[in-house]
Each structure stands twice: as structure tokens, then as C-alpha cells.
Length: 261
Image (cartoon, helix red, strand yellow):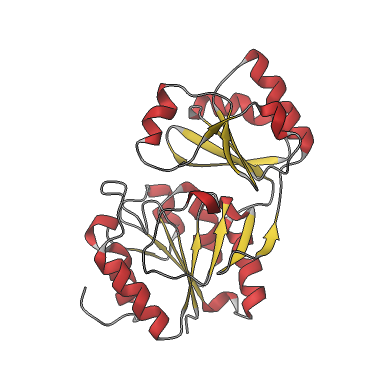
């Protein structure tokens, strides 16, 4: 019996095309709550950069790719930060191979500089309230994630400089460098330990490369129809795209919702 559902945000809960949550998704989440199923968000976003959900309520949040887990009232449950040595390595690398690097700390989102790639990504509203700040200033704070606006080829050059980080790419324009061992799967473990839920009683739904770990980890992993083949292979079930009521259809397939969308 599924007692908890973990939902990715971008491309799963929210459409990349409309930047809205489909009505069928809102209905499905409401029905899950009526049945006593807990609903959590699991995202690469910062807690301060989540979109406005209106009347939707969630039981907790896994944010920054598992680097921070908080309760419904935003009280911390778990946190995992990047070692200072790796932040220093990023600063050193920037002197010879500069690229936009966005850091996430407790205060918000900060980027060393903007370029055309960042400007284009910003149209997707993924990083609201983004401020300019030097990477050197980040050394004074706990850093959960360094979002690097580089290609997959450039990533191969950068990764060796960050030995204590894993790279999670869910968009072609950038990759998320997170502390090793940090993932949505680890976030799920911390959440269910807090709520007394067994792993086999969990379901996760996602579409990005940073969702693969949690889709393999939970009791039932569902990939959205708009996911890449790599993500689909990691899932137990593939549903329709976010714009074709994919989330609702997946929950209906597993008998978790019954109402018509």
C-alpha cells in the first residue's frame, strides 16, 4: 500500500510549456490527501525558488537535490553541504575557465555573473530572485549546490576539480554539483524515517536525470512521458507527458485516484 508519493516539480508537477500545474494534477493531489496519502515535493530547486502553488499543500519538501529536507512548516529535517575545499576549487577554476556558477545557500540563490545562456534559462522561471554575488563571498556560508552553466563536454573537464561532488544534470544548459551522497533518494530516506513510512510504501514520479536515483530507490518509480530514455529505463512505469495529464494518469493506473480529471 502506497502511503507517500514524492513528486518532482519541473516537467512533472509543473509544465515547461505553460509554467502551470495542470488541473488534473491539482485534483489528483487533493484526492491523495483525502485518502490519507502523504505528498512530498522532491526537487533540485531551492526552497525559496519554488513556484506559487496556490491552494495546494504538501507534507514536506526535499529541495536542492536532497541537500536539504524540511517539514511542511519549513523546519529542517536534514542538511548536507559541499565541502569548503571544493568551493575553493571552483573559485580557482573560474580564474582560468570562467563560466556562470549559481550557488544555493540558506539565504537564497546567487550567481557570479550572467550570460546569454543564463538569460535564456531564466525564461523558464527556474531561478527566481537570483542575485549577483562573487563566489568568494560564498566561502563564508554553507553551500548546498553549485549550478554550473556548462555543456556536457565541459562538465567532463570541471568534474575532476570537485572530487567531493556528484554531478546531476536535468537540463541541457547546466548541471547541478552537489555533495557526494546527496540525492533525492537520500532525501526520501530522511523524510520517511521522520514520518515512520517504509520504503516499499513509497512512490516517486519524475522526468529528469536528477530523478533517476529516487525512481530506482522507491517502492514504485514512475517516469513522465516527457522524460529522456535514460530516465524511463530507470522507472517501473512510464506515464504520459506533463501536458497530457501524466501525473494524474499514473496515479489512476496504480489505483491511487479514481475521480475523472
